[in-house]
Image (tube, rainbow, N blue to C red):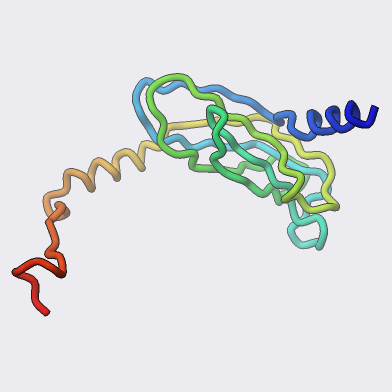
Length: 147
């Protein structure tokens, strides 16, 4: 009986708050926006500072986010990283071990995503800029290095 209760609690704690899929037609950096809130969250009150959520993409951990803006939906932007072409799944789950004890229910109403076009442009610009090229450096053991 105790084992059954423990298993039920574990499943309830680890159930995702939100799951969203996205698809890329080419490799890109992706930014997610969580639209989320938490009951009784208040950064200014001890014991109710915020609720932690964990973000995973394709089953791999990406980030923790602290929800601190109260019960109403607020936006929390997170750079998820660079992903290959194809379909991907973003899962958001609650992290009770990092959540303040006085916080109530945690809610994620939706997760939106977009490609980070400015990051892609900036990366391409640096790679092709004529003044920033890779130059071999002299090692300390090189015969042309100075002591």
